[in-house]
Length: 305
Image (cartoon, rainbow, N blue to C red; front, side, top):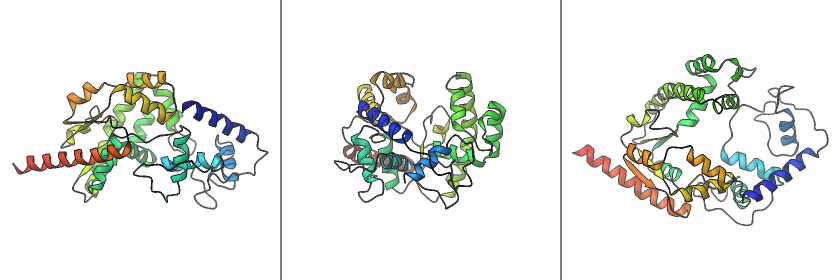
């Protein structure tokens, strides 16, 4: 699968670079000299995407997984997939359904996983408000002054673009080479994000709130939860999933797993463990539904005692 994705990537690069000169951008927010000017012009010319309005492109807006895979599919010429997908969150009639099926066939992506995401979707079906802490952080990067001030003090002006927005890639280049800087970034985020989460939790009428956080325990957010769940899977299963999902080699997949805390750490820190070794998304969805019901019932019983 990884070889197919690599081959497709080469074909796309060759397709892009053979084009003649493109028409200049009509978007007022795509400034001359920006690193993405040619990419925007090409994408619009090939009808891969369009602007948010007739005159704006919104180059700093984030993309959903659906949008990203659709862009790739359109860049490849919108080929008809040979099969459909079985992901519970990809409706057959959605604009991205064929793109997702095509991407899975070519090893470009896979399901986000049959574990954590399945549990979160089960919560949503219960009417829960699920807060993605990573998404909240990226929202804060737009206009949260305390966070922006701390980031500037820690990393300097180099992480800010000319328009004042934060360049997360610039931060990444710094922290992934320097463990101390990574720890400093984590400390800043862990200090600021509870404030934003508290505002969102206060604004919802949902009886159940779920937090989706990569470092739930390390950040201290686990302490505000009535129940914490560790999603684990055998290493060989994790390796195969990561290879299929991210189109990487087995060696790289294993190195990424080795860099993370092992399952024993999360078992010791969390109240529950959901073992994610199920072979299909459908089975994982069912198991997650049952598991979430068990946790909710347990919490209700504890409250009633």
